[in-house]
Length: 338
Picture 1 (tube, helix red, strand yellow):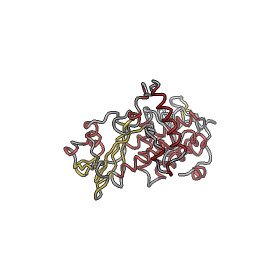
Picture 2: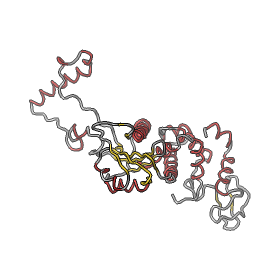
Picture 3: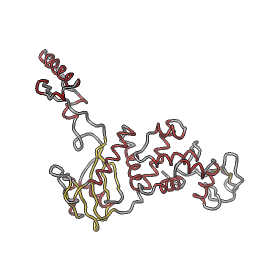
Picture 4: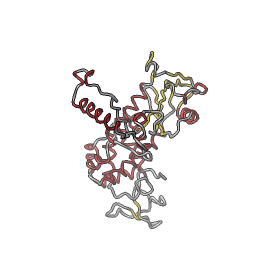
Protein backbone atom coordinates (compact mmCIF):
# COMPACT_ATOMS: atom_id res chain seq x y z
CA UNK A 1 0.00 0.00 0.00
CA UNK A 2 1.58 3.26 -1.11
CA UNK A 3 1.38 6.67 0.54
CA UNK A 4 -1.46 7.90 -1.67
CA UNK A 5 -3.56 4.83 -0.84
CA UNK A 6 -2.89 5.27 2.89
CA UNK A 7 -3.84 8.95 2.74
CA UNK A 8 -7.08 8.08 0.97
CA UNK A 9 -7.98 5.16 3.23
CA UNK A 10 -6.87 6.78 6.50
CA UNK A 11 -7.19 10.56 6.06
CA UNK A 12 -7.14 11.28 9.82
CA UNK A 13 -5.55 9.86 12.95
CA UNK A 14 -8.99 8.75 14.18
CA UNK A 15 -9.49 6.68 11.02
CA UNK A 16 -6.18 4.91 11.71
CA UNK A 17 -7.16 4.22 15.33
CA UNK A 18 -10.60 2.85 14.39
CA UNK A 19 -8.95 0.55 11.82
CA UNK A 20 -6.39 -0.58 14.42
CA UNK A 21 -9.13 -1.29 17.00
CA UNK A 22 -10.98 -3.51 14.51
CA UNK A 23 -7.79 -5.45 13.87
CA UNK A 24 -7.04 -5.94 17.55
CA UNK A 25 -10.48 -6.21 19.15
CA UNK A 26 -12.92 -7.03 16.38
CA UNK A 27 -16.28 -5.26 16.20
CA UNK A 28 -16.24 -3.68 19.65
CA UNK A 29 -13.30 -2.00 21.45
CA UNK A 30 -12.10 -3.53 24.70
CA UNK A 31 -9.98 -2.48 27.62
CA UNK A 32 -6.36 -3.34 26.87
CA UNK A 33 -5.82 -4.32 30.52
CA UNK A 34 -8.86 -6.42 31.47
CA UNK A 35 -10.65 -7.06 28.13
CA UNK A 36 -13.82 -5.42 29.43
CA UNK A 37 -16.17 -3.80 26.92
CA UNK A 38 -17.60 -1.51 29.61
CA UNK A 39 -15.82 1.62 28.40
CA UNK A 40 -16.47 5.33 28.52
CA UNK A 41 -16.84 7.49 25.46
CA UNK A 42 -13.66 8.17 23.55
CA UNK A 43 -11.65 11.02 25.10
CA UNK A 44 -10.08 13.90 23.20
CA UNK A 45 -6.82 11.96 23.04
CA UNK A 46 -8.72 8.99 21.51
CA UNK A 47 -8.30 6.87 24.67
CA UNK A 48 -11.00 5.03 26.64
CA UNK A 49 -11.53 4.85 30.39
CA UNK A 50 -12.47 1.37 31.58
CA UNK A 51 -15.37 1.46 34.06
CA UNK A 52 -14.37 -1.91 35.53
CA UNK A 53 -10.64 -1.51 36.22
CA UNK A 54 -10.65 2.31 36.07
CA UNK A 55 -7.65 2.40 33.74
CA UNK A 56 -7.19 4.53 30.66
CA UNK A 57 -5.95 2.67 27.60
CA UNK A 58 -5.39 2.98 23.89
CA UNK A 59 -5.12 0.44 21.09
CA UNK A 60 -1.30 0.44 21.35
CA UNK A 61 -1.17 -0.66 25.03
CA UNK A 62 0.62 -3.98 25.36
CA UNK A 63 2.00 -3.89 21.82
CA UNK A 64 5.51 -3.31 20.54
CA UNK A 65 4.72 0.39 20.08
CA UNK A 66 3.25 0.95 23.54
CA UNK A 67 4.08 4.42 24.83
CA UNK A 68 4.87 5.81 21.40
CA UNK A 69 4.31 9.50 20.91
CA UNK A 70 4.29 9.09 17.16
CA UNK A 71 0.79 9.21 15.63
CA UNK A 72 -0.50 5.91 14.30
CA UNK A 73 -0.89 7.48 10.88
CA UNK A 74 2.85 8.24 10.86
CA UNK A 75 3.54 4.59 11.69
CA UNK A 76 1.42 3.61 8.70
CA UNK A 77 3.40 6.01 6.51
CA UNK A 78 6.66 4.51 7.80
CA UNK A 79 5.52 0.96 7.03
CA UNK A 80 4.56 2.02 3.52
CA UNK A 81 7.84 3.69 2.57
CA UNK A 82 9.98 0.98 4.22
CA UNK A 83 8.23 -1.94 2.54
CA UNK A 84 8.46 -0.12 -0.78
CA UNK A 85 12.25 0.24 -0.52
CA UNK A 86 13.55 -3.02 -2.01
CA UNK A 87 17.13 -2.50 -0.89
CA UNK A 88 16.26 -0.72 2.35
CA UNK A 89 16.55 2.94 3.18
CA UNK A 90 18.57 4.96 5.65
CA UNK A 91 17.05 6.31 8.85
CA UNK A 92 17.88 9.79 7.56
CA UNK A 93 15.78 9.16 4.46
CA UNK A 94 12.93 7.84 6.63
CA UNK A 95 13.27 10.94 8.81
CA UNK A 96 12.78 13.16 5.77
CA UNK A 97 9.87 11.12 4.43
CA UNK A 98 7.75 11.05 7.60
CA UNK A 99 8.94 14.28 9.24
CA UNK A 100 10.24 12.98 12.56
CA UNK A 101 13.58 13.33 14.34
CA UNK A 102 16.49 11.06 13.42
CA UNK A 103 16.47 9.11 16.75
CA UNK A 104 12.72 8.56 16.33
CA UNK A 105 13.13 7.35 12.74
CA UNK A 106 15.96 5.03 13.77
CA UNK A 107 13.95 3.52 16.64
CA UNK A 108 10.81 3.13 14.51
CA UNK A 109 12.74 1.36 11.76
CA UNK A 110 14.28 -1.15 14.15
CA UNK A 111 10.92 -1.91 15.79
CA UNK A 112 9.55 -2.72 12.34
CA UNK A 113 12.58 -4.91 11.63
CA UNK A 114 11.79 -6.86 14.82
CA UNK A 115 8.27 -7.44 13.46
CA UNK A 116 9.77 -8.62 10.16
CA UNK A 117 11.97 -11.07 12.06
CA UNK A 118 8.89 -12.47 13.83
CA UNK A 119 7.09 -12.83 10.51
CA UNK A 120 10.09 -14.69 9.05
CA UNK A 121 9.49 -17.45 11.62
CA UNK A 122 6.31 -18.38 9.74
CA UNK A 123 8.20 -19.42 6.61
CA UNK A 124 7.39 -23.02 5.66
CA UNK A 125 10.10 -25.66 5.42
CA UNK A 126 12.23 -25.35 2.31
CA UNK A 127 12.31 -28.29 -0.08
CA UNK A 128 13.33 -29.26 -3.59
CA UNK A 129 16.68 -27.86 -4.69
CA UNK A 130 18.06 -25.68 -1.90
CA UNK A 131 21.31 -23.74 -1.90
CA UNK A 132 23.35 -22.91 1.19
CA UNK A 133 26.18 -20.43 1.51
CA UNK A 134 27.69 -17.85 3.84
CA UNK A 135 28.38 -14.15 3.42
CA UNK A 136 30.86 -12.08 5.42
CA UNK A 137 29.66 -8.59 6.30
CA UNK A 138 32.17 -5.84 6.91
CA UNK A 139 34.12 -3.08 5.26
CA UNK A 140 35.49 -3.83 1.84
CA UNK A 141 39.29 -4.06 1.92
CA UNK A 142 41.21 -1.54 -0.09
CA UNK A 143 42.94 -2.86 -3.18
CA UNK A 144 46.66 -3.24 -2.77
CA UNK A 145 48.77 -0.79 -4.71
CA UNK A 146 51.22 -2.47 -7.01
CA UNK A 147 54.49 -2.65 -5.06
CA UNK A 148 56.65 -1.76 -8.04
CA UNK A 149 55.52 0.72 -10.66
CA UNK A 150 57.85 0.71 -13.62
CA UNK A 151 56.96 3.60 -15.90
CA UNK A 152 59.11 2.38 -18.75
CA UNK A 153 57.32 -1.00 -19.02
CA UNK A 154 53.76 0.34 -18.59
CA UNK A 155 51.45 0.59 -21.55
CA UNK A 156 50.77 4.18 -22.63
CA UNK A 157 47.04 3.87 -21.87
CA UNK A 158 47.83 2.98 -18.24
CA UNK A 159 50.31 5.78 -17.80
CA UNK A 160 47.94 8.12 -16.01
CA UNK A 161 48.36 10.59 -13.17
CA UNK A 162 47.84 7.91 -10.55
CA UNK A 163 50.56 5.70 -11.97
CA UNK A 164 52.95 8.63 -12.09
CA UNK A 165 52.22 9.46 -8.46
CA UNK A 166 52.84 5.83 -7.51
CA UNK A 167 56.17 5.88 -9.34
CA UNK A 168 57.20 9.11 -7.58
CA UNK A 169 56.19 7.68 -4.21
CA UNK A 170 58.16 4.48 -4.88
CA UNK A 171 61.29 6.54 -5.49
CA UNK A 172 60.76 8.50 -2.27
CA UNK A 173 60.11 5.32 -0.27
CA UNK A 174 63.23 3.67 -1.66
CA UNK A 175 65.35 6.63 -0.50
CA UNK A 176 63.74 6.84 2.93
CA UNK A 177 64.02 3.10 3.58
CA UNK A 178 67.74 3.26 2.78
CA UNK A 179 67.99 5.93 5.48
CA UNK A 180 66.44 3.54 8.02
CA UNK A 181 62.75 4.48 8.03
CA UNK A 182 60.35 1.53 8.58
CA UNK A 183 56.84 1.85 7.10
CA UNK A 184 55.56 -1.59 8.16
CA UNK A 185 52.00 -1.15 9.59
CA UNK A 186 51.80 -1.79 13.32
CA UNK A 187 49.12 -2.92 15.78
CA UNK A 188 45.60 -2.95 14.42
CA UNK A 189 46.79 -2.02 10.94
CA UNK A 190 48.75 -5.27 10.59
CA UNK A 191 50.18 -6.05 7.18
CA UNK A 192 48.69 -4.94 3.89
CA UNK A 193 48.22 -8.57 2.91
CA UNK A 194 46.23 -9.29 6.07
CA UNK A 195 44.13 -6.18 5.47
CA UNK A 196 43.24 -7.41 2.02
CA UNK A 197 41.78 -10.73 3.14
CA UNK A 198 38.20 -11.42 2.13
CA UNK A 199 35.62 -13.94 3.33
CA UNK A 200 36.78 -16.77 5.56
CA UNK A 201 39.72 -15.87 7.77
CA UNK A 202 38.65 -12.26 8.33
CA UNK A 203 37.16 -10.59 11.38
CA UNK A 204 33.98 -9.84 9.43
CA UNK A 205 30.68 -11.28 10.66
CA UNK A 206 29.34 -14.33 8.80
CA UNK A 207 25.71 -14.69 7.74
CA UNK A 208 24.52 -18.14 6.67
CA UNK A 209 21.65 -18.40 4.22
CA UNK A 210 19.57 -21.18 2.69
CA UNK A 211 17.35 -20.51 -0.31
CA UNK A 212 14.89 -22.68 -2.20
CA UNK A 213 15.05 -22.37 -5.96
CA UNK A 214 12.14 -20.09 -6.97
CA UNK A 215 11.12 -20.00 -3.32
CA UNK A 216 11.88 -18.44 0.03
CA UNK A 217 15.12 -17.73 1.83
CA UNK A 218 16.20 -17.99 5.47
CA UNK A 219 19.32 -16.38 6.91
CA UNK A 220 20.96 -16.13 10.31
CA UNK A 221 23.97 -14.37 11.76
CA UNK A 222 26.34 -17.14 12.87
CA UNK A 223 29.40 -16.07 14.82
CA UNK A 224 31.20 -19.41 14.53
CA UNK A 225 30.86 -21.58 11.46
CA UNK A 226 30.96 -25.22 12.50
CA UNK A 227 29.43 -28.34 11.02
CA UNK A 228 27.21 -28.75 14.09
CA UNK A 229 25.72 -25.25 13.75
CA UNK A 230 25.29 -25.55 9.97
CA UNK A 231 23.64 -28.97 10.37
CA UNK A 232 21.30 -27.57 13.02
CA UNK A 233 20.25 -24.80 10.65
CA UNK A 234 19.54 -27.30 7.84
CA UNK A 235 17.43 -29.45 10.18
CA UNK A 236 15.54 -26.38 11.37
CA UNK A 237 14.57 -24.95 7.98
CA UNK A 238 14.85 -27.73 5.37
CA UNK A 239 12.79 -30.86 4.73
CA UNK A 240 15.76 -33.24 4.46
CA UNK A 241 13.75 -36.09 2.87
CA UNK A 242 12.45 -33.96 0.01
CA UNK A 243 15.46 -31.78 -0.70
CA UNK A 244 18.81 -31.70 -2.47
CA UNK A 245 21.38 -29.39 -0.91
CA UNK A 246 23.91 -27.53 -3.05
CA UNK A 247 26.90 -25.88 -1.39
CA UNK A 248 30.46 -24.90 -2.18
CA UNK A 249 33.49 -26.86 -1.02
CA UNK A 250 33.71 -25.38 2.48
CA UNK A 251 34.85 -27.91 5.08
CA UNK A 252 31.82 -27.21 7.30
CA UNK A 253 29.52 -28.74 4.66
CA UNK A 254 31.62 -31.88 4.23
CA UNK A 255 29.39 -34.22 6.28
CA UNK A 256 26.01 -32.84 5.19
CA UNK A 257 25.47 -36.00 3.11
CA UNK A 258 24.77 -37.80 6.40
CA UNK A 259 21.45 -35.97 6.81
CA UNK A 260 20.48 -34.84 3.28
CA UNK A 261 21.24 -35.49 -0.38
CA UNK A 262 24.18 -33.17 -0.94
CA UNK A 263 26.21 -32.03 -3.90
CA UNK A 264 29.18 -29.69 -3.77
CA UNK A 265 30.54 -27.44 -6.48
CA UNK A 266 34.18 -26.46 -6.33
CA UNK A 267 34.36 -22.74 -7.07
CA UNK A 268 38.08 -22.96 -7.72
CA UNK A 269 37.20 -25.05 -10.79
CA UNK A 270 33.80 -23.77 -11.89
CA UNK A 271 30.71 -21.88 -10.70
CA UNK A 272 28.02 -23.73 -12.59
CA UNK A 273 27.65 -27.07 -14.32
CA UNK A 274 24.39 -28.22 -15.93
CA UNK A 275 22.28 -26.34 -13.40
CA UNK A 276 24.40 -27.25 -10.39
CA UNK A 277 25.25 -23.85 -8.91
CA UNK A 278 24.60 -21.55 -5.99
CA UNK A 279 23.57 -18.57 -8.09
CA UNK A 280 20.24 -18.07 -6.30
CA UNK A 281 21.78 -17.57 -2.88
CA UNK A 282 24.50 -15.43 -4.46
CA UNK A 283 21.77 -13.20 -5.88
CA UNK A 284 20.34 -12.80 -2.38
CA UNK A 285 23.79 -11.88 -1.04
CA UNK A 286 24.02 -9.25 -3.76
CA UNK A 287 20.81 -7.66 -2.48
CA UNK A 288 22.17 -7.55 1.07
CA UNK A 289 25.52 -6.18 -0.05
CA UNK A 290 23.94 -3.42 -2.13
CA UNK A 291 21.61 -2.56 0.72
CA UNK A 292 24.26 -2.42 3.42
CA UNK A 293 27.01 -0.81 1.35
CA UNK A 294 24.71 1.48 -0.63
CA UNK A 295 22.10 2.48 1.95
CA UNK A 296 23.36 1.83 5.47
CA UNK A 297 27.13 1.96 4.74
CA UNK A 298 27.92 0.20 8.01
CA UNK A 299 25.99 -1.78 10.60
CA UNK A 300 26.89 -2.78 14.14
CA UNK A 301 27.16 -6.47 15.07
CA UNK A 302 24.37 -5.96 17.61
CA UNK A 303 21.91 -4.69 15.00
CA UNK A 304 23.01 -6.89 12.08
CA UNK A 305 20.34 -9.60 12.73
CA UNK A 306 17.64 -6.94 12.37
CA UNK A 307 19.01 -5.79 9.02
CA UNK A 308 19.24 -9.38 7.81
CA UNK A 309 15.63 -9.98 8.90
CA UNK A 310 14.53 -7.01 6.80
CA UNK A 311 16.19 -8.34 3.64
CA UNK A 312 14.82 -11.85 4.24
CA UNK A 313 11.29 -10.53 4.76
CA UNK A 314 11.38 -8.39 1.62
CA UNK A 315 12.84 -11.20 -0.48
CA UNK A 316 10.15 -13.64 0.67
CA UNK A 317 7.43 -11.11 -0.12
CA UNK A 318 8.90 -9.85 -3.38
CA UNK A 319 5.81 -10.84 -5.39
CA UNK A 320 3.15 -9.73 -2.90
CA UNK A 321 3.87 -6.16 -1.79
CA UNK A 322 0.36 -5.26 -0.47
CA UNK A 323 0.54 -8.18 1.96
CA UNK A 324 3.67 -6.73 3.53
CA UNK A 325 1.84 -3.65 4.80
CA UNK A 326 -1.10 -5.66 6.14
CA UNK A 327 1.14 -8.21 7.89
CA UNK A 328 3.21 -5.57 9.65
CA UNK A 329 0.19 -3.57 10.80
CA UNK A 330 -1.47 -6.70 12.20
CA UNK A 331 1.71 -7.82 13.96
CA UNK A 332 2.38 -4.34 15.30
CA UNK A 333 -0.99 -4.37 17.08
CA UNK A 334 -0.73 -7.84 18.59
CA UNK A 335 -0.21 -7.99 22.38
CA UNK A 336 3.38 -9.05 22.63
CA UNK A 337 6.35 -9.37 24.94
CA UNK A 338 8.84 -8.33 22.25
